[in-house]
Structures are given as structure tokens and as C-alpha cells.
Image (cartoon, rainbow, N blue to C red; front, side):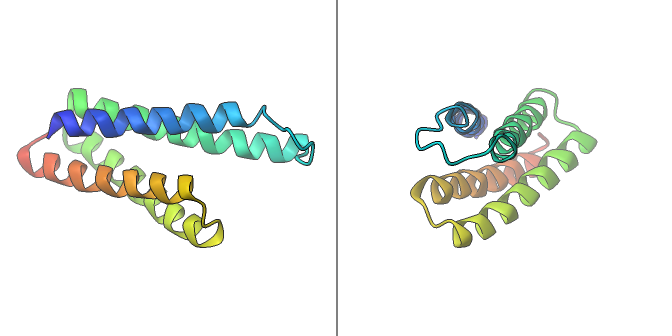
Length: 113
């Protein structure tokens, strides 16, 4: 199960990097600097969520478990709403990755981290 968790964390990092890099690929010239900064911050949120999950995977423990689970649940809820607002494949795939991350996180929490 820890191997699956590592893969999911890796996917979060890939999505985060892609999100942050895409910020600078403003091909159509429509996004303002403010919009680009908000878009970039979404990538940072995914990156930090990945870090929190990595810490739980390495260290475990009650507080880290709780923080990682709450982080994953909040991000999952946001992505479900975002999937309705922006029904694009990458958003739905990321929501699926987060759903699987929440499930694995809960299973690992029951097993003791």
C-alpha cells in the first residue's frame, strides 16, 4: 500500500510541476499577471500537499496523519467543485488521484502509518 501511496504522491508532484510550468506558457496572451500568479499558486498548493503526504509516508504519527488527511480532503472537495466548474480531463484525473490518495491515506492510518 505504501508503494501505491508513493506513486500517488509522485503524480501529485507531476501535476504540480505541470501546473506551475503551464503558467508561463501563455500562448494566447490573455492571462494577466494577476491571473498567472493565481494559477501558479494552485500548483504550489498541490506541491505542498504532496510534501505533507510525503512527510506522512516517511514519519507517520497522529498529528501528521491528521494534517495530511485534512489537507487531502480539502483539496479533494475543491477539485470536485472545480471539476463541475471546469469539466476538463486533467481536472477530473487530478480529482481521481486525490480521491485515491485520501483512500490510501485512510488505509495507512488504520494500519498505523
